[in-house]
Image 1: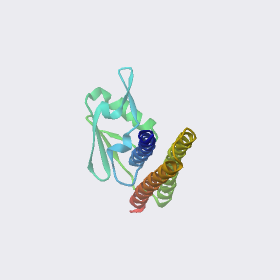
Image 2 (image 1 turned 90 degrees about the vertical axis):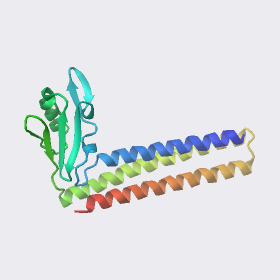
Image 3 (image 1 turned 45 degrees about the horizontal axis):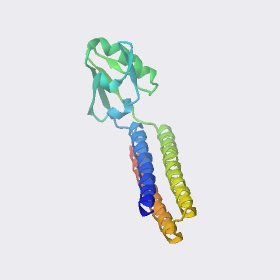
Length: 187
């Protein structure tokens, strides 16, 4: 029975960790005024008939905090990459110099910063909901086990452990959100 309880706790922790990883990935994509190669994550390019992620057909780097350089491995890919970036509607206007694309990341306006902070908070709430769902699932499993013969003391202790996990991951989400919000609001 103890092994089953531990398995339930491990599954809950794994689900909570996945919610945290997803939040980290989503926050990395958000523009905080500094150029980052992650800003172009999710952009796909038509590469000889196959839809391919941008980072698989080019090198993406940031030589300075305001510029992203996209250097395709094949010069013939310049135009499709440029079109894909424009189609992604990220607010970027790539400059094609014949060998690479230079993207100047514009400074964020105060209004845009506030919109981004709202988006960050929304993503954080989604992560919190996922964490609470993992807690609910674990507690439901523990109640089933209690009906099947798990001692009440063990079930209560396991529920407390699940709550500690929930509190820990909720605190991590809050820390991530605070850092990102501070990053966005810093001019």
